[in-house]
Length: 124
Image 1 (cartoon, rainbow, N blue to C red):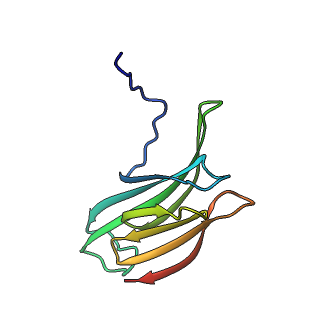
Image 2: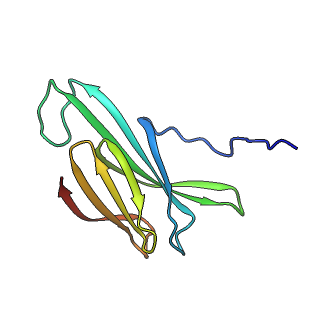
């Protein structure tokens, strides 16, 4: 018997979505992030302030999904340079993000708000 795939929810990310990662760490397995990437000609750069150059901008969008009630909630948006990749740490609720500006950014889920908090950035 063939499986049927159907859309449960949609959300307009505005920029092109290029990475989706579910948090593997209990008790945050209901959280996932969507990273976005957008090329914008002639707009002001998020990092350098230069105009007239191609800017790669992005967002980290945090969502919560409740399968019992089939509800999707957008919890947070963080504007960043374009997201190239992101991965959750397998044993802690920390997210590593690599951006088009050559940064490795580290975020952690705050227990009180269940939102991402910036921990550290490293230029690579």
